[in-house]
Image 1: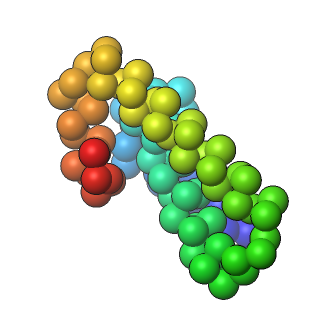
Image 2: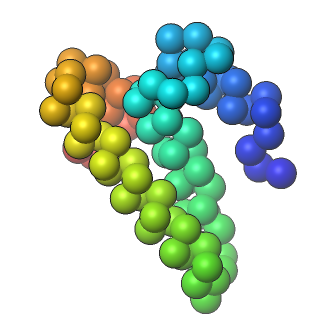
Length: 89
């Protein structure tokens, strides 16, 4: 499986306040970004996989809403996570 418990802990410890910080916006955005990158690679090879395409669009929307929320609440945290993940916003 591409996303096991150890990989999740690594993402949470890198972008959250601690390894068990699963609820902060930064850690959720980082997890969504990892999953989006994986699904994007899958879609390049399987362009007719419509269920995965729907999941990818849904994940992008969730990440977008979280980024908008973070931008409204704390612009410095928003800028830091965008820079750390290399997002285009």
